[in-house]
Amino acid sequence: MTASFLAEDYLEIRDLTVDFDGFKAVDGVDLTLLQGRLHFLIGPNGAGKTTLVDALTGLVRGTGGAKFRDHDLLTMKSHMIVRLGIGRTFQTASVFEQLSVLQNLDIAAGVHRAARRSVFARGRVPERVEQALETIGLADLAHRPAGILAHGQKQWLEVGMLLVQDAKVMFLDETVAGMSSGEREETGELLKRIVGDRTIVVIEHDMDFMRRYADFVTVMHTGRVLAEGTVAEVQADQRVQEVYLGTATEAATHG
Image 1 (cartoon, rainbow, N blue to C red):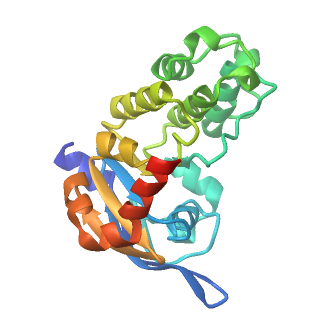
Image 2 (cartoon, rainbow, N blue to C red; image 1 turned 45 degrees about the vertical axis):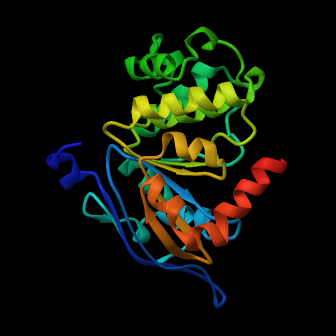
């Protein structure tokens, strides 16, 4: 991470509030999301994590400020936010299951070109798509329907779709939920490989995954930031133990 990166590619969030008819789902949140850092966003259900990302990606209206590359995301439509270099995944993978892995990536890459210039019209696979296939480990399955992929592989395909869009900020919503231990490890290693020139924010309930891969952690509770810091700092915070980590650990132990 260099000073030049930070000057251009950090996301500065100030006093972000999302109000649903008087209920503040997100209440005055301040966050700085730095490039090159795996930033985990944790907290109980209903803490406002996904709503925060919804506001930053144009799906719900928020007030305050969210500045990236001299643009305020809170004033922009979702498709313009994507073109600016900000992408996300959802809790349930949203791939085109009848299309091949390659076609899914090519459609995602199309946000930066005319629709008529599909992979079929060009007759060759763009370098960006080939690189993404290798990075996510699905090159051998490029021509298979996405619907036959294992759960973890679908999540990797979604990450690949963000890669071909050249997303510099990635929000990943519970990306390892339902994965096997092997898939979780491969996902963590994938994120470590691609984070260097990107900002990656992972909404996560898997505390083992968080402990292993997080560079920085923000804990949300009732729409606000409760605590921030390294994994060790957050785990040592008594407020975090009371409102979240205790119940999260119990759930993991009994689930």
